[in-house]
Image (cartoon, rainbow, N blue to C red):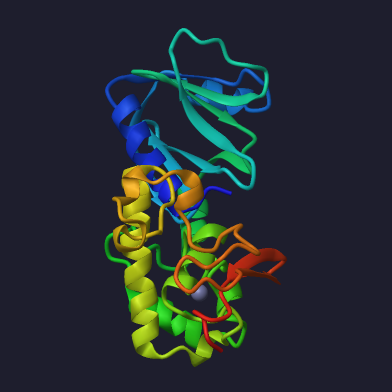
Length: 263
Ligand SMILES: [Zn+2]
């Protein structure tokens, strides 16, 4: 599933590609015909990401809400490329964008926009988000921190890769009750989220291994060398050599190091 950095990067790239003039919209798959016909010929006025939700605002007070879910993709395409029949929505400006397999693609009213964003926790990439709100939400949770980090009402935009990597980087055991974290650890977790997600937007992928540990800048690391623990069960920890462990939290696998992340 795409994490927050992907959605913020999409918001930025879509803005630069589509904001100049009227946008052509169509639904080659047919499942979004009505929505696409309302959008066709409108001007894109703004794009906005909040956690894993993407909102595109068009003239005529139209708000397009996209959530990619587990398998959705929104990718740039050459203008002369013909869309396959799986494309839910095609947008055309300076170049074309194809949306496939989204969990959500709908035109929504302002009230719905407000109710969706009200239910979301602070997003580390949004201006004005406060770590104190994250701390208040964690203080109410007895659940393991590995579960709370995927709860979008606690912090918006963290997915399965970042949660495992952040807990490793801060030496926090995934089973640690959320409410037991010390204020300093919560502040560190927030600061790490801000810096890592910003780097994710810049690189358009997740690289958590530091220059110190890798001996080269994050942007030059191959995918197999980019992460400390995610999907590395049984392989040696990059810092201590212990085999990386795997456990289930919130029905999703989480990877961790027994030695670096003490109980
Ligand atoms: Zn280790």
